[in-house]
Image (cartoon, rainbow, N blue to C red; front, side, top):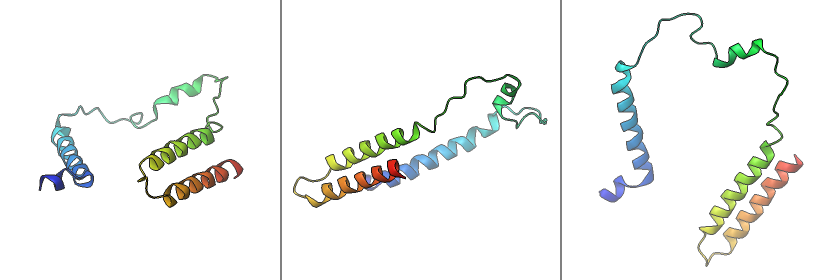
Length: 106
């Protein structure tokens, strides 16, 4: 029974239920402010008053971040493949290269 409770899906469900229970238990102690029309406005709404000369463009960084993530996952998965299986690392490497070709060509 202890091995079943320590399995990742069961442990995840248990900790999620414990967290939700704690959230529900301490919700009545949360500070409640008065309701007004400014309460649900985004935090950076006041920044619209100032002219912003610098506009960082993060969309050019996205393909490189995705490339790094794919390579990290590919290295992790290929490192955990049993040594007597040759087809899986080749399949993983091929799929990783295909993802990168799609990423940088498309």
